[in-house]
Every structure is written in structure tokens, then in C-alpha cells.
Length: 372
Image (cartoon, rainbow, N blue to C red; front, side, top):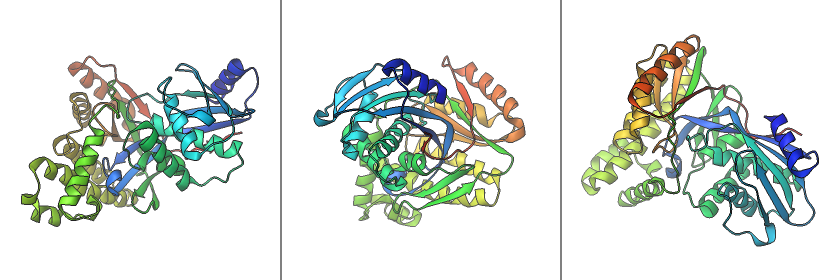
């Protein structure tokens, strides 16, 4: 992909780029819809991602091109919404960073769009790393993640938490990161030995801005307020049980998912450290059931994919991953059984749907990096 993005830049702008950035995608092994309640998540970065070729330009004009989408031009002195949708993530990051120097940039990538692998945050962090280098700013992963979250929340309009941005900014090779979304403390946990992570793209997409994502976040805030807590992070299972009569049934189910998911995520990280792949898999399955039944963010395609995976050889556990409403699922699989696992899962999934699935096996890689 590095050669692709450099060649694309040269073709578009007639010169070699000054900078090249690689920004990974991410998959979350467990801990979904907990980050915006200051909870715990356990994601890892992927070998798939976004590559960005950049050269600083004279003045404040930005020329943005891509191998997959329409090009656009805009001025840092007059940033506003409009134009190709993908450039809103570019503009949002430039706005959040208060960038002052114009850029020529070309984007290439191999992440499936809308599959729940965080193509948007990958692009945001790529832009952030490039701006820091072009304007000779010090690089701080935590601050960059917070700025990318601000871009997503306030410019793009998606009320996401910090998980995607933080793991992409600070990912560690070979490990998932247990992220405390309140303190932003990170703890690397190596994947269990002789296991592989298989991402199962259902072939169905969703738009977070148009989905029920923001509605779920409001439900968490309402439930926390009704329980007299700053966030659901401060609520225990016992607290929730005692206060059940004070919450509407739907709010109770939403809160129950977040509270129990936090517990599952911390336990999964500890089981990973103990090299206990079967226990991690059991917790992944329980997570999917909670996301499906209590949080109601799964979909028929996601449920079909998880069911197909759980019937396949070599599987320890599987669940939907990401925001839901379509997109991808993830499975933890015996490393020596990946091929029969994929063959069985794909065949079973295709029997129940007309969607075109895609299967990706990826190691945990490092976070966003400046290549040139």
C-alpha cells in the first residue's frame, strides 16, 4: 500500500510526497458501547489500514485526493461542511488541530468501509500524524486521540467514545490494549499463544451518524442520571439490581449491558494474560448475547455470522464487533484451524443470506506511524 499511495500522489500532484503515514484500522475483541460511559475496552490494531501521502503546500489551501473517492479542495481559513463525505473526517481533524499550513494529500487504504473496523478514526489519526510532522509539532498519542475524538464528535456529529482513536494512536504489536476510557490508562495484553483473530465482514454496512448510535449514548446518560451517578462506569451489578424498579425496562437493559460488559472486558484481559483462550471465547459469546438482547445493536446478518462461526471447527468464541447495526464480527480461533474455520463459516453464512462476506486474518500491529 505504501507504493500505491506514493504513486497515487505523484500521479495527482506531479511530484513525490514529503511524508507518508500508515494508520491502522482496529477490531475490538470485547467491550463495545462502553467507552462513552468511561468504561473498559479491549481492541487491537490491524495490518489493514489507511496510508496517507502528504506534502506541505504554500498558503492555507488543502487539496485532498483518494484512490476510492472524489477529490476536493478547501481552505483552512474558511473550513465548512460540504463536498465529498470522506473529506469531513479530514476537515474535522484539521479543524480540531487548528492546522495553519496548507497540504496536498493523497489517501489510499484497504479497510472495508462501513464494516466496523474504524476506517474513519484511521483516517483522522493519519491526518493528525501528518499535520504534526508538517508543522513540526511534538507527537503525543493521547492528545492526538482526544483531538480525533473531538473531530468526530463536534465536526462529523457522531457521539463516539475514545476507543477507536486511542488504540489507533497507541497500538502495540502482538497485543490488544485494555483501555480505561476514564483515565486513558492502557495495559497491553498479548493474545493467547497459537490463536488467530479472524474478522468476518458480513457484507452489510451501516452509517453511524444515521443509526441509533447517538440514541444509545443518550440512554446511557439517562440511566446514569436516574441512578445518581456521573456515568455507568460507577454502577455495579448490585447497584443496578437494587434500582431496577427506578428505570424503565429499556433503560435498564441498556444499563445492564454496559455494566456487565465492563466486567466481561476486564475478565477477558486477565484470561488473555493467563493464556486461557477458551475462557476468552466464552466471554466473547456472552458479550454478543448482551449486545443483541440488551443493547439491541446487532442485526440479522451479524447474528447469522456469529452463529455460523460458533458452529465451525477451531473456534473459541465469536461476537459482533464495533457499533453494530451491520458491519463485522470477530472470532478467536485456533491458529492451526483458520482455513477450515473460514471455509465452514463462509459456507454456513452464505446458506442464510445473499450478502457477500469477507474474511480477514490480521496480527495485532503498532499504532499510527510516520514512514518517511
